[in-house]
Image (spheres, one colour):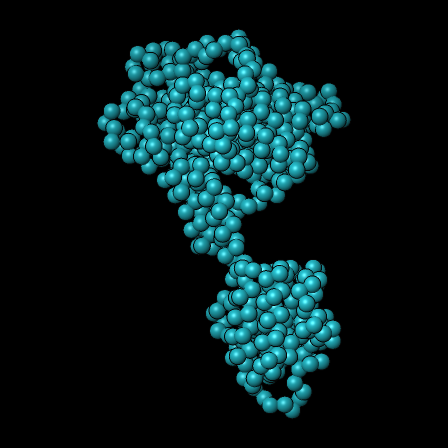
Length: 563
């Protein structure tokens, strides 16, 4: 246990207080998240207990809190419901198998040190995905907080169902939800460490017992099963594994992304081996699968609570686990009168926290296209469900990045007066093009997706030059990689320019690009004496001499983003 090295007994009081604070926040959240996953509420406690114990031994981060998570719970529920329906023993067994698959995949990512795959989800797409999750959670809890019959389907169908039956709202149930939500919000405003959810649970329990809310139509949890769960192996079948595997991959990607983000956010207080953290989180899902729980994830809010409490070890998690054991073993009946509306209000509060409105505004101000990606991802999750949403989110990220790299920024260059510096003419009005010379910079690796675009842009500038271009200089400072297709395109371009009477030089080629181009055969087309350290060196060595015909390369429209 890396966090145990150098642990001081004097830190124990701080860690115990942090553990009590953690459990006060975690227990209501775990109960509510279990409902979100379609599991018995006690399954959330089983998942939390399995996660904190295993991560303490297998993880690296000293403050990371792991357990049932509202981000992946809807995806788990949707995946299992598609296979097993929404109830019965088969649902629990399939959930265990799905959790087992998720755990194995996350462990594999950690052992193979493949945490970089989390980078395939861009911030705009993740923000849109989380916003879609938030809408899905709120839509799913409308029947709980209004006391209406459950409505199945996607988020829009659940919202429409709640609106149709709005006149049947149970006032007592709604009052419980409103009071719980207000208590949590006010507690948060007083102090981020205040256990608002726990206070709300205690108040709603007291009110339920005092006013006999169940007699007024308020649904309550009933007595939880006492004692720790027996370990059972998930049901295994090749057919079932095949049906659940796509969803397991989607959940594993979200777990890796969120765990990586949490580790990075608390790197100073935590550990430095995120791959070991993946192993710890994945192993938590494995144990949860055998213990009647479901897949777990790192929790940024709970991790923040531990870090802000001054703890620097996994002791708070173990303390919280011990309290949960006591609750399961000795006080299972204490939650019998807890209204489901309480858990619904807790989940609505959690959903509003992951709905990052400020981030959406920032994305909108930065780039409308990326904001559009956020909205598309949000809509996909809401309409098609969480499973297709996360898979399409990854696809959107990759396609958008590919689209951008296929149309990279480039620039026609001109010399700044009195210097040897060549600068984009769209940025400096005093940048002077040299008659008979086209100097051009391409700001991207040259590969299959943009090779044709590269050739077209060069021909556009060379064909537009007046007088005719006698020298083309490629500023290759932005081309740090050339693939086979890009190399072939570069060779064709050189041959075409030379056939039209335009000499070709390359300047500022560094990194792997010169080696890639050489392997493609560039040296046979562009000799060593046409390779230069700077653009100015190339123009002075090979450009037209003074006294040659005057003229200039036409300036591109300054408003053009691809000048």
